[in-house]
Image (cartoon, rainbow, N blue to C red):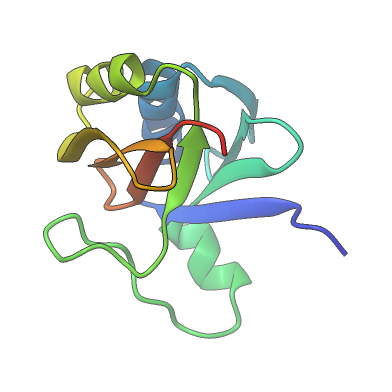
Length: 128
């Protein structure tokens, strides 16, 4: 088994795809004609977005929508880059909420944190 997708449920799929394009440089891999599902070109594991309407009909149990005004949910998307400082600045300029400026960790990794407009916690880190 392998991880195939990370799907984030958002109010507006096209807006999420556009934010991730501006903030992190990802291209759109797919957007369904309904506008309810889209994917980014992120490599082997896809990051995708599903509208709350589709999520409510596809997921067999109710879920709690992300709330950007509440503390982040207990997970993060970690994006790796050799240019943590520059990519942190780019994300913030595109509308990400800065949470932790780039800094060096004792284990040798450079990391920073932002939050996307939908409430997702995003780590921007150098490769390990």
